[in-house]
Every structure is written in C-alpha cells, then in structure tokens.
Length: 342
Image (cartoon, rainbow, N blue to C red; front, side, top):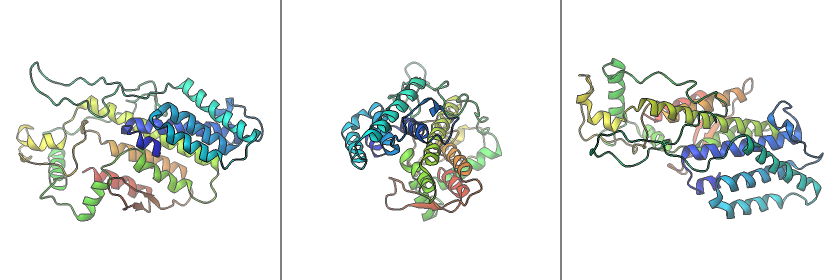
C-alpha cells in the first residue's frame, strides 16, 4: 500500500493496482493450498512444500514493479526483508517461482494499464473558454476489462432528479445548508466526518478489510480470496460509477447553487457566492462515487461475514490523521460515507 501511495497514482488506478496484486496473491496462495479447487489458480502446479510466504512476497514484488516502477527501491527493500524471514532452500525457491507464475498468468489474461488514456472532450462552442483540466475518471471506459461485472453499464442507475421536481429542490436546499463552507448547519462531528471522507482510494478503504482479516482463526487462503474480491469490487464500482457520471454529465453543487435562478425551479434560491466545504473534485456530480464504492465494499463485507459476528470496523484517513473512525455494523459504515458526501 505504501508503495502505491508514494507513487501518487490517481484513485481509479490505485484501486486497479490493488486488484491486480491481491488477485495474483490469491492465485499463488490457492495454487499451493488448493482450498478453492475451481479457482483460476488450479492451472498452476507448484511442487509440494512451496513456501506460501515466499509466493506472496514474489507476487508483490513482481506485480508492483510492473505497476509502480517509480518505487523500485522501496519494493526491492520490502521484498528482501520478507525473504529474510524465510529459510533459503527449495521451499523458498518454489514459492518464489509460483508467485511469479501467478503474476505472469494474470497479466496474460488481463492487460496491465499503467496510465490513464484520456478520451474526455470538453463541451464548448468555438471561442468559448472552459476549464482546461481533464476530469478525474476521464479515461477510456474499460468495458471489456471488468473484474466482476459483465460490463461497466450493467447496473447504471436512472438519471438524476428532474430540476423542476420537489426532490431536486429538497436536495438542493440540503446540500446548500449542510455543505457550505461558511454559515453551514453542520455539527462539529459532521464536519469531521466530511473532512475524513474527503480522501478516496485504497489508503482509506483497505484498513476496513483488515478489520476482517485480522480476526482470530482465519487462514491465509481465505484472507487472500477475500482481499482479492474486495479489491476487484472496488475497481468495478469505480469504473461503473464513472461510466454513469460521464453519461449524465450532471452539474456540481457549486455550479447548481450559483445558478439556482436558471434551473426552472422557483423553490431553489440562488446563492451567488456559495462555496463547498470540501473543494469540488474534477468530475461530474451524479451518481456519488464514494457511495457506490462504499456500497460495493459493504456488500463484500456482508458476504464474507455471513453467519458470523461482525467485528468492529475501523479505518483512518490521511485527511484527518490520528483520528480513526469505527463502526459496530457494516450498514453504519456505508451510511456514514453516503452522508459525508452531502
């Protein structure tokens, strides 16, 4: 995780890197343990006694060198530190070999993308100025490269509320009051939550998964499978939500509230100097990306803990260091993320 963060990969690409790494880890580990005989890793045939630890270390090194090459020094150092705890010999060598085979097999089935390919075309008329920044997520939609979906638009939601509807005026007033930088209606706790969830990507979400994997009695193969699914769903949720965002091109609150006299709804009063508490990210408003990702992760957490007690979930945010958030239920986590975006 530290290597990906240090490489300053954007949120969607950072999620993709994690999916590649965790999927290859599961394939390598499961090839050795054979705990899930129908998984893709059944084609890998490691010698008996191959080291699980060495295979995981080899996967991380091999995949991260492909996806975060700027962090080669840190990656190699972490790899050597991991191998230092594993006795030299055939077991270690065989584990390294199966890890490298798992990476090669996954990359052969799914091309590795290390850069976003911009397709975004600014909407304008000849001679008219528009902001000259490619929006986040303005990369080519990977329709044929989903991990768990059939295609990115498989579950595309319906359009945003009609601007003349009561729902629109209700939501407009709520965001105008709760999301304002000054003169807002937030409590101090709501302000802290908003700041906490102003970050995105693996750095804030993956500690939630470790709330599960760190529980007593869990074995390495089950954890590897869970982390792979967790990472894959995060990628597909992001790809699906950005497909919908760029399909609808719905305006952000800053634009809507400063143009409240032009939406055809007499109930929305314009605020000409309104500013949001959190700086507006460069992508369309609808649907909510954090909400989609949290919903996806919540579904994976529910599936993984079905029939078992749910441990207390916890994570931290680089935007509010030293102040972890905790939840006693999965639903409470998902709901908090949704409310934070208001």
